Length: 592
Image (cartoon, rainbow, N blue to C red; front, side, top):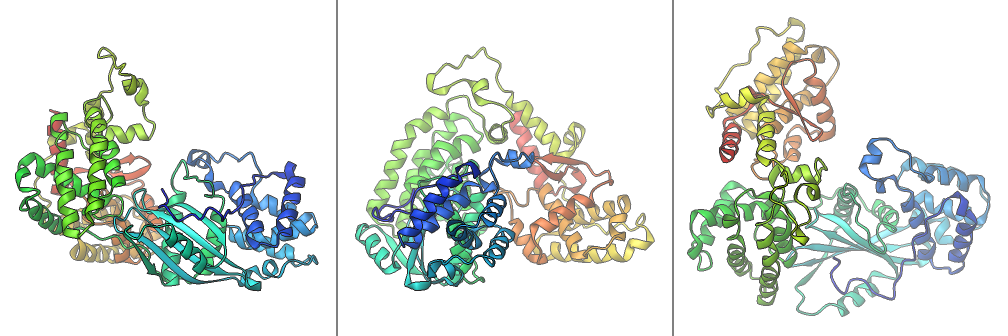
């Protein structure tokens, strides 16, 4: 939710207009009216809404995957229509599309069409490409649920616009809402400050322009991955306009840098809490295990700070996250709210959070605890089963009925969680026989096996091996190095043609390390030791190019694979490090 006081009611960006070819006369009349106001935002809002309405990113990912054709026209088709119909209104639309279209080819097509037009446009529209962003400010709240990013835009002919984009961290650092208002940033900030209490714990930060671009662009990209998409009165209708304004900003910013909470830092935080007045009374095995889950949630979800607790974070944790993620009995889970209250007091005290905010956050625990206690005692999918439910593998209503009506029938056939879980564990190691024989002995420091590697690829393989070894020595350990060596040897003997074709050795090495890392949950939020981004940074490569290479490497090798939610992953015990095998066996023990 956008923080209060950030949307001046007198500034309206205009309604969304969803138009197709059959509505063209209405569109032409609407554009004529927008131009007559002489207010740039009126026309830009109309054009932005039109571009957003035909944006394929708003389609269901399942429709995109199946290549289903949208019923409406594409922006490219609309641009071609505007180019064919020579009117002052279509000229104005072409000028707007030439800047607002997300596709560079469509922008180029609109610019080419404009070369043949003689219509006189308003100066600001004719020279729209000369607009500039001259200032960026972030409004940041101390509890970190989200930030408002404010951009000052100067158009030709002295017109000014101000963009306000709210980036929500609880949803994954995405643009949740945005709007554009006429007028200078100074005027808009005055209105915003007037609508915010003095004790609202808001900090105003001047941002470097390149940093503002990095944050907003990345947050829009992540938001585009959500389905169903986030929608408000003005979003995504103004998204093309915000994207255009972001393109005016210089590149080179770092964007949000997520703090990495190491195992050592988590242990130190745990020690401080259980030594504190708030935590000492709870220092037992159950509460320590529950605190691990709170730290997992805090460090790996939302803003990535396990000491940041707000009412929204409490709601997500109790209503959704713990009931869905933590597989345990109700007696154990019932202790979480009391622990959470003590941990909130401890964290807010260490961080110097104002007492009124602490009270509000604790009130959220009181508010959501009754629902939480009911849910953890109700039949529901948990752990991998919850993920399967989210993916649509089964219908929870069919399996458990409607919880709100308490019509669950104990005699109904239940979803067999233990069977599904066991099958997932078997799938992770390549079958039930491998699972029965699994042990936790560490992989040895093993030399690379050259015996069956063809002579003509040995030089290339040696290059890849050296890069893999260097990565494991620098970032990982001996077990990972052995696993990578084993995988590379299997590829070199089972699919040597991949080394006969042209290709970069560093990309192949990165693909080997990526495959081994995924097989061992190296990148998982709960148990992972690093992010895929960090691994790719070591090689100086992008994940996309490496993932494509990974798929081609393992073809024809006979290496057991599993298709884990469309992500090809190795499933061979010989390539699993001891910590991964230990965790699999621990999960198996819980089922028996």
